[in-house]
Image (cartoon, rainbow, N blue to C red; front, top):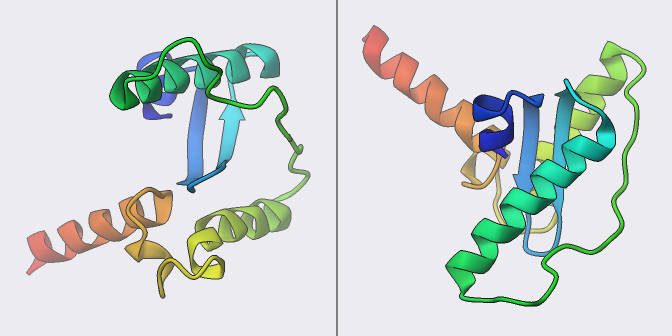
Length: 118
């Protein structure tokens, strides 16, 4: 996900969580939605299959769900929903404790900033 945002600059990545059987993303795309999904799904499928030693099988389901965010209030609600997904699933007590999420990234960044300020 960071590759598409940082290297290719196809989107701005604002929130994410990688769960066992699904992924949530809050992005501001810089390319068409089809190009965005093709890039994210293609790159992550190749990398995951490489790590898992799998070939010849689809990694992602053909479907995806997207939603256009209409205002800042909805943006905040969706970001909170995404980052609290592991809490609702009972995987962690606090969103920032789930390592495969933007909440964990924000927590690590805040801890680093606090450490350097003291």
